[in-house]
Amino acid sequence: MSDHETPSGWPDAMYLEAARTTLSRVEATIDRWLDGDVIDIDSARSGGMLTLTLPDRSQLIINTQPPLHELWLAARSGGYHFKYAGEQRWLDTRTGEDFFTVLSACASEQSGRALNF
Image 1 (cartoon, helix red, strand yellow):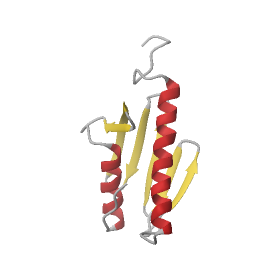
Image 2 (cartoon, helix red, strand yellow):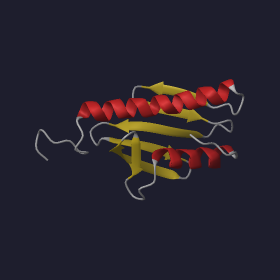
Image 3 (tube, helix red, strand yellow):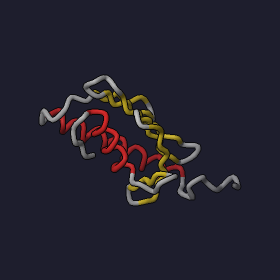
């Protein structure tokens, strides 16, 4: 990789904006759930890391990985790596599944109720 190439082929600024937008979308969904008394999930953001604490105190951790242009998700079921595919889509590097599909499945599994990000 030359000095001008990036891991994803996308400019760093595009990756960073997409990552920020994705974290904000997760936070907005949680805020709607809290306002609608759907489920009590605490969220805490520190830089590029967003920690979601579910009612049973289990956590989902979403972390940006700027050097790799990836988003990582840590869940009870395992760790997932996602590459930006454009148009606000992040795809699992192993399975090709969409980030929000995987996040929804992990949150549903850990909370014991159907949640759809």
